[in-house]
Structures are given as C-alpha cells and as structure tokens.
Length: 191
Image (cartoon, rainbow, N blue to C red; front, side, top):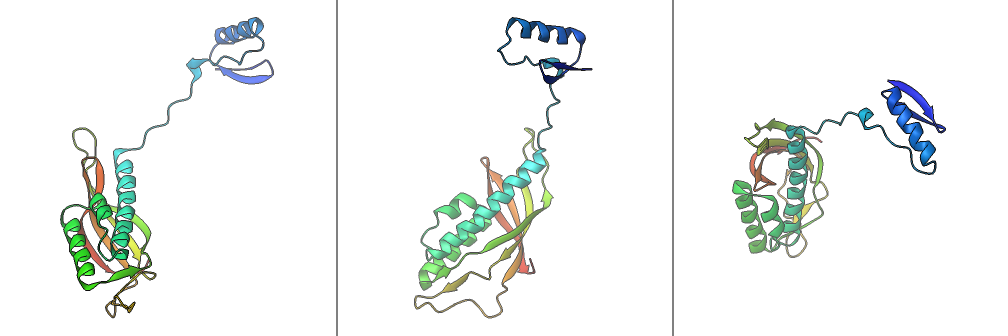
C-alpha cells in the first residue's frame, strides 16, 4: 500500500496506478471532490450476534413490561392494554388477575418501580432462521418509590414487603415481539 499526498490531502491508495488515476481526475476536474479508491475501503464491522441482539431486545421488553405493570396499577387495574402488549402466557394471566384485584378492592398505586439492572441468565439456541426466541433474564427492581393505596389513600402494602427484589423472568419472542412470559422467581434482594 502506498501513502500519497494528493492535492494537499492524504490519501491511501493500494497501487501507483490508482494514484495516477486520481491525479489525472484532479487535473481534469480540479473543483471536484477527490475520488475514493474502492479497493481500499475499510473492512466492514461485524454485525451483532443473534445472542447480543436477543438479550438487548428482551431487556428493553422487560423494562417495558415493568412500566406496563406500573400503568395498570396506577389506573386501579383499569388500563391493561400495555400489559397485553408486553406480557404473555402465565405472566399475562397473573397480571390481569392482579388488575382485577386492584379494581375489586378500589386500590391504585402511587409512584413507579425502577429497573436498576438487567442481565441474561440463560439464552436459547437460535432457530433455523438464526433467531433466538426464548431467554431468561435476571433484574433488580427498586420498588421503594411505589406503593399501593386504598380509596382513602392508606397504604395497603403488606408489612415486610421488600423494597428491592431480584426478579428472574422467562422472556419469549412471540410473533417477533419480546414479552414477559413466566416468572422464574422473585425474592428480596439488594440492587
């Protein structure tokens, strides 16, 4: 490879012939932008792996699921549309049941949960098309700023309810969309 200064700018060219073509082009068209020798184009950056993409997308979906539960609880269990977008299977059934409890008891939540961190625990194998359709995430949820209250505004949070929990959630890719599917465990923990 030859390094040549052409027209006051440094240009890397693979061959003297390419350098001569560039000089000739500059003589004929001095006001034009310098030509680029495509034989010296940079090596393409490798694309993200299927696993990296799946973990990133599922982590985003998990955060959206937690936000959807907050929306449902804040509405007193009335607004469940977001739950249906971000949950499926056992998890959707459990959250719809919780929404019914909030409606029946006239509870609503105040404040929001915060997802402090999310990391993968297990990642499924890619299918025939290279897509990963299932994985398990672990996340730490800070619930210190969220509580459920009754119609009079009195807290209904059970005594001893942890402020921070470690959640393990199976996530599934359903028709191309990541959703919370099955709670593996939820226990008190520190974020």
